[in-house]
Structures are given as structure tokens and as C-alpha cells.
View (cartoon, helix red, strand yellow):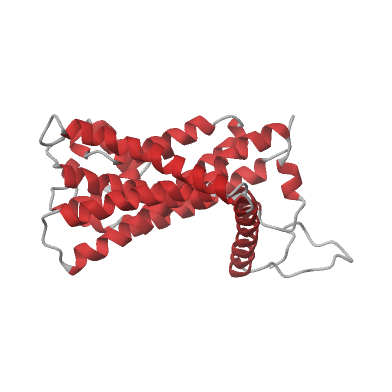
Length: 290
């Protein structure tokens, strides 16, 4: 197997193609180096970092304050008590916060395609995905993760359920799987911008909008919407289905009970699909003005 897929030419020097493990390792190392550079840059102004992190934490906390205000007037929301809604909120916010921290800069790709600055990334001996994902890495996003984790901690203490080994294990599994699913949506949305060039808001509808949707019980929404986030963009596997198992709730849409254990499988499929979309989009890129 060779670097070039073109017919053999006399005198051409053949070079073995790098394995996917080598490319993955190169991408991870490059991502880490770029992230470290941005972290050092941020820490040069520590007061600014602290203030922006607190600002992010406070802005995210206002979302949960809205839920608390609703529960000051009602005893349940869609048949769910406050600790149960807090569990949905905490798992969704924590998973999205991790994805946003690690790869949230992908939504800037459309801007790079429009102004041509993506070309400067193409000439560097570093995977493009790693460069775009780590670009302008923002440690202030830790405020979102901390806020979501605190709400999740409250929910775990307040919930009155039988904590079996499987239920305990389900919590970190849904956080990791949810992070991977959101990251896949970020990458797929960025790949779409190779053609749309100005689709950041479309991407945000599925990322920021998706996490807001998942903070509330599925019983609040129409069945068509639940079907959409199950079979079209499978955000329901971030926390809805595994949370239903933890909370002892029935699975909606008449689906078999085994779906609550599928988040890792769905996350793997989403990441593979997003990777394929990224490769197709990158191959179709013809620089700005084309």
C-alpha cells in the first residue's frame, strides 16, 4: 500500500502509507501541544482566566435557576421530581461541557473556509482535525463542566433509588458516551461547513440546543421529536435512555429495554460517521473563492 493511489510511474519513489495508529498518535500529540500552548497563553493572565471561568459558571447556573423557579410552582415536571430533572441536567451539561472544552472550537471552521485561513493549516505537517479542534482552546469552559458536575452531585445525593452496581456504572458510562456523541456532532457540523461555509448556527442548534433539550424529561416533548433525537441525530443516547434505566423509568416509543445499554455503541457509530464526513468534506475543499 502506497502514499499515492495513482498508477505507477517509472522512477517514482514508493513510500509505505502510515498506519491509522501512527496517524492517530500524531494527531493526539499535535492536539496536546497546541492545547498546552493555549493554556500557557491563558495562564499568563490568571485574573482574566478566573473571572471568565466564574462568568461561564454563573451563566450556566442561570439555566438551572430557571428549573428551580419552575419547581417553586410545581411538584413535578413531566412526571419527574426535581432530583430526577437535576440528574438529567447534570449528565447532559457535564457531557456537553467536556465535548465543548475538548473540541468546541470546531464551529470556527466555516469562518476559516470563508476567509481562506484554513489554507495555512493545510501546509503544516499536522493533522487538520487536531489543529482545528485545538485552535483557541478555552480553559474558561471548565466553568460549564464544574456547574454541571455540581448539579449532578446534588442529584446523586438526593435521588431515592436502589443503587446497584450496574446503575452506578451507568453514570460514568453515559458521561463518556455522551461526550463522544456531542464531539461527533461537533465534527460532523464542521464537515458540513466545508460546503455551507456559514452553518455555525445550524451546528449550534444540535450542540447547544441539544444539551438544553436533554436537560428536560422526554415526557415533555412530542413523540416525533423524541423519534428525531433517537433515530436521526441520536442525542437521546447521551442521557435520556441510560438515565431512564437508572431512574427506573419505562423506555419511550415502545423500544426494547436493551436500548438503555447502547450509548457506547451509538457513540462509536457516531464517531465513525463523523470521521467519514470529515474526510469527505476535507477532500472536497478547494480553497476560498472556488
